[in-house]
Image (cartoon, rainbow, N blue to C red; front, side):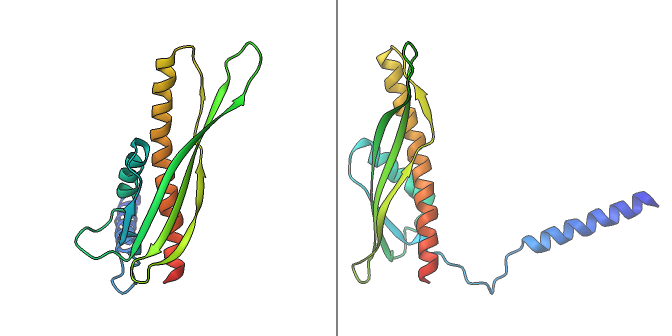
Length: 161
């Protein structure tokens, strides 16, 4: 008897979860985040940033876009910790400057900058190791900054509508 009740409750909870997860067709869907054209400069870091932004925003290619996003990324490396006789830790910060324009009116909607820092890295005596470490840190910061920018602009575009 106990196992039958357990099975019935399991089946009911399964159907409840499935019915709650189905989307309601009457709810408005705000897909303005997919209607953004992205422009970045043509250096290595900004091209990589552009690709991460395209992955984050998932722009629709066959429709006319409503918005234009101009973004640039730059990096700042500072010593975070240093003790005499020990290697220092470097703090790498990504600085994203962005401008969001409306394509219909050519009006600036929002501009500003975002800072993103995800890791501290120790320096080594090897120049090759330092270069490879900085390359991977920049890739992680590109990914993190693109997601942060997408979430921030998504919040702004939802307020507009």
